[in-house]
Image (spheres, rainbow, N blue to C red):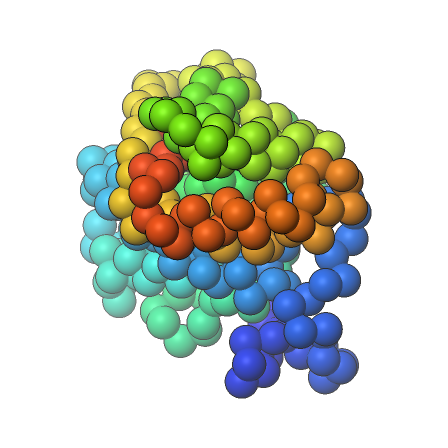
Length: 289
Ligand SMILES: C[S@@+](CC[C@H](N)C(=O)[O-])C[C@H]1O[C@@H](n2cnc3c(N)ncnc32)[C@H](O)[C@@H]1O
């Protein structure tokens, strides 16, 4: 179990106590692009929660997760889903929240926190969970097949795997209504971020494959649904946090220049872009009893 202390300014202290640069500018040019070391990661978790926690909670309830259930939240990121699961399972249940970087999770909120790499580490407590859930995690992992096998192996017979991932190739636009230069620029910026993600090994067509890959993992009663928001403050704030997070990478890769990024951030602040996201595909399947 690990967690990294946070500085009052939101920066992170590494395990030796040495401060990371303000804003964590030391992002490596490989691995997970939107790493949790940046303060923008916390903003992104808050807006992702606003946009998608309702979707996730609806699926979790429908799958029968309640008092006494055992849940594993994979790549938890922020606190909201582990806390919601802890509230659902109550004192007789158990929630484990894992991530490669657990800085944004809080031990003592009714769930256990562990550092765990789902693409490399063995399943914790194999064969014991009623629910294993990952949202917006597998899409980023080059070895997502191994991660899926690890999550499936953690299920008890009859337990549910719920995987939610974007399919950004299905709906690649930031602005559906590309009515003027600001909207066209927003769509160019979104394409540039997609290019960065692809270079880090993300599969931007992964969402559509989920029913097939869950069946291939040996699960039964597989089904899926999709949803995406159009417009609103949460879409705007998520976009701005993402842009600020990857600004350095966009510039270094020559995918955007300073003026274009600043103009896009200003247009977001003006609140007239009606930004949207890629569909979130939620897919679920059960380990045979
Ligand atoms: C886009 S965020 C999504 C966070 C959260 N699940 C949500 O939906 O708000 C992706 C999360 O996956 C984590 N992650 C990336 N690679 C991982 C790995 N190999 N094993 C476990 N977690 C990983 C990241 O650290 C980050 O917290």
